[in-house]
Amino acid sequence: MYVARLLYPLRVLGPGKRVGIWFAGCSRGCPGCSNPELWKQDPRYLVSGDTVLKMINAIRETRGAEGIDGFTLTGGDPFEQPEALRELLPRLREISADILAYSGFRLRELRNRGYRDILDQLAVVIDGPYVESRNTNCFLRGSDNQEIHILNPALEERYREYLKNGRNEVQNFRTRDGFISAGIHRPEYPRELREALLAKGVTIGGETCGDETAPEHTQNQH
Ligand code: SF4
Image 1: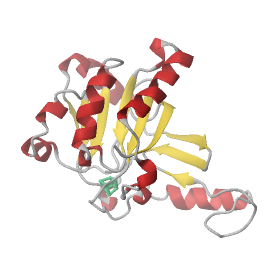
Image 2: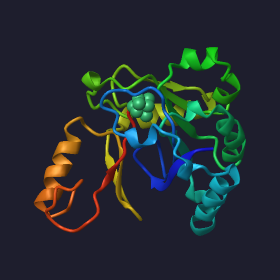
Image 3: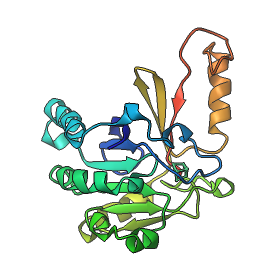
Image 4: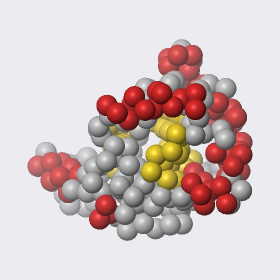
């Protein structure tokens, strides 16, 4: 399977402290997508399901069994790797049934494609392509054409409460390559971030004002 990154504790894409799993590969090409670097299934992202689980178990060992409240699957589009989902989901569910997945496909398309067995293992799906002109900063969604579907009745109350009180936030992770900014960003966020970093003397894509590595941005638009 192609998995580009795994971040913990992710607090801005679902309730609690979550493991965020970014799948590589998306053929949709939404204009304005903030993760075009994850459109391609680059061989360097190829990992086994065992490796992904090993990383998750390492988190559990340091944080304890209660350390993971759920999982958020994004990318790229996780549903462009249905076999990877079939392999991973039962193993993730042994840790938490709260698994939220983003997809550029509509829920009905996922059903029609024969992915009901995958959907049955998910708590929530946020579906539909990202439409830049409809980025209205709606909670958890990159654009307001997308819909949040709560699929697991056992988690319905938890999500209803979470959605009632929630507002979009951004969370920055420091990685070996720089920074990754996770969450739902306003369309003007990349420009504002760029200006703020340049003002602090950070180098961005060859625009030199300092000597640090360019930050990598990631957000969930789909
Ligand atoms: S916004 Fe999501 S669905 Fe659209 S191209 Fe980017 S990763 Fe794919």
